[in-house]
Length: 593
Image (tube, rainbow, N blue to C red; front, side):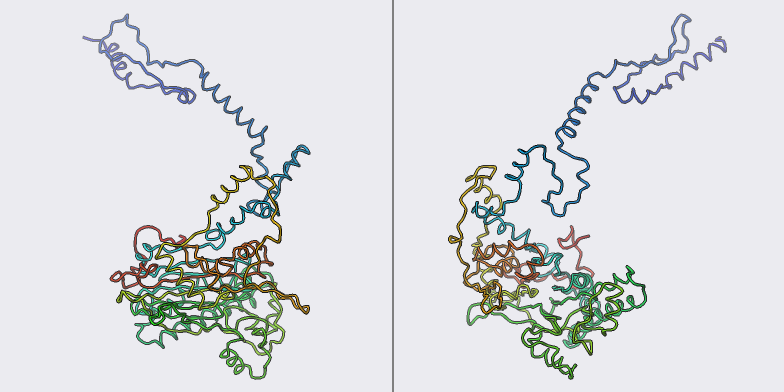
């Protein structure tokens, strides 16, 4: 019989195998641990040495310590001694990505090196003619900011293929655009494209980018169907005027209720103190009808194939609303019969502004006393000279309706295309010539004969091949007499009257170099094959001087049907109701969320 003492000893040994002595944090971070324990025994002789589990440990981690010490020393050398990174210089603001506000030079040799090799060379194009094409190579993506809807995206959303581009002259750019799908009458999915040409700031055009398409869609979707054209047109017109009226009323209330310099009032006033034109195209794919609403002087034109001439012809979808439009002059004369001089017949301006209809523009819609109050309290502008009986401007659009030829039912019939653009494009090219250019683009696209300009890598490679990798050889300065005078430009300083350089984009100067039709239009509007003119235009980059050369320019080109660029609109793909309009896998390219 085993005594109670021996039983307790045996039980402790049985439970001893469950005990673990945890390593310290220092030991756990260095190397693995090995625990050796003896198996339990119920009865052990007295001479057996009973010990708790033990750990096997190594000596001090010499190799790890030396490695970390070497790496730390190298890091200190490169950061502190070589000064690859000055930790505090990152806090110095850079106005431009390539600016250099922080400069340290240890010797005169360093200064000379800086002057010779790092200061921008204002004569670099004269010394290195190989660099002439750099801006042209960057034009499509970095200057004109072109984008294209792929045929896959268009097919998925049942929307015509669209190309777009926006090139700024003002900074920030005052132009905006918007495209997408939204419910139309009967909740059928309609396609929308909007171009918003701002002036006196960008607040109004930005606000329209967010609000105009949803507001028009909300008005249209309240209709049961689109069978009555007048009802649809009135719904679009009322959406425009209601949106402007609500915005102007909200701004007026904020200016009246809030104290001077109140941020809440200033935010409400922003879209009212500036202004914007609006050009909106609404496409009903079920009926193949296109409605274009125009407020201001942005323009839409349709390219339609003419079988008799075997060419595309231009069909206007809107009319510019300026003081040169006889209908606008008559309307204003009827509304303000005792003010015959509100429109300047030479400039076509209405009390100083180039358009007769627009969103915002408080100085043409509010009375002078209230405008002066806003100017004093919220840093606004003074009333317009000659303003007596406002409002002089309205946001009510003129709406046109057109049946679209898609070419789906007739293989011998070429589909329509539409060009929408702010006046920056139309200042340089006519509607007819713009349609001719896109026709040439489609031909080149179909025959795979588009000849893009050299890439930046090709230009720099040619430069290095001539002058070496550093590219700092002096080269031969190009003499002024060897620079070709661009064709078709005009300028004059005769009789003390200054007429700056001007030009028109015409077919003899067209160059088809871009896969993007909208970029192709802007490139040709600014010079086309006249490379020296294009380079000169792109060299003027600072506002406000750039505004003397060209205006902000936004272009949308929409290809209907199943043509070379309109394959996205396939027969039988219509999803009908708008609830399915945004279904699909993946993130659509135009979504920013």
